[in-house]
Length: 261
Length: 139
Image (tube, rainbow over all chains, first blue to last red; front, side):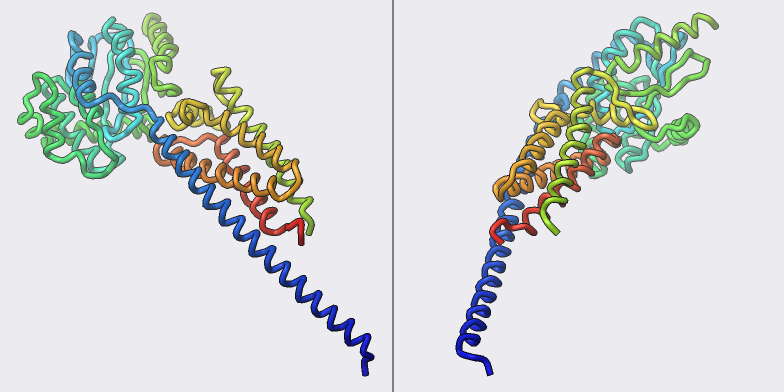
């Protein structure tokens, strides 16, 4: 039988153990509360950072500015179907776009105006536009009217105005009213004719031809560009900035190649 | 298990992060192309995107400052430093996850350096949170 002193020591030991366990439980609870506070604070900061990040992105030009650009940028430049510029220009730039693609819109703002002024207006290059429709049904609805506009040699203006009014991808925004509005914003375009022509075999064939050309050139994203001497071998170029800087070297090389042939 | 291995891991991750973010910051200010396996197109597209800046400040520079802060906090001892490190790492992890999502869905290009940084920040969040909840100086 344990002595009184031993019983006292045991009781003290049990009390100390209970206190220790209480302290551990309290510490755990405190750490969990701390973690909860950290998580709440982190989520709040992340939310603010994301809002700043999204509001800091470059705002596209307004629909009005885009429409003005669409109607003025190509003034005085020959346009036949999906080709902009002198048909006999020594260099050909093939541009593959999806009308829903935000980077295609960005190129139309940041790169196309300089490209047109520097190389197309000067007769050094022509641009051949090819429409892909991989993003979704809105892409195809837009592309069909673009080819309808190509029949009136106003495809580039329509595409520019589409970008100026571009909506959220695959939300069904490219409906009849939208397409009429975009087409109606293009000076000189017969809207009814462009819309009526969109389901023609010719338009379907043009869209299929664009896709086939993209497949042949291993193009799987937009915008993509092929550059080379007209009637020669076109090569895919790296797009780093989506400005004219991406084109200077390839066009220079293609001009030199065209001169030597 | 003591806190030491996790603290060392956090310090190593901080230094790796400084290396990656430092390189991307250098590339940004030197206006040169980052070295990327399989061509620099993806890295350049990401670097040139709207998402590469936050309120006009290059994200690469913000990443560098974040890793330097984490290095300092992980060098310091005490609960306050560990709490701060966990907070900064979780914020870094959340923002990295957002940027990776944007990279894939909006920019439609990925940069190996950015993915490396996102991986480092994910590991850092795991390590710092573990340090915070598992080790109590008063226990």
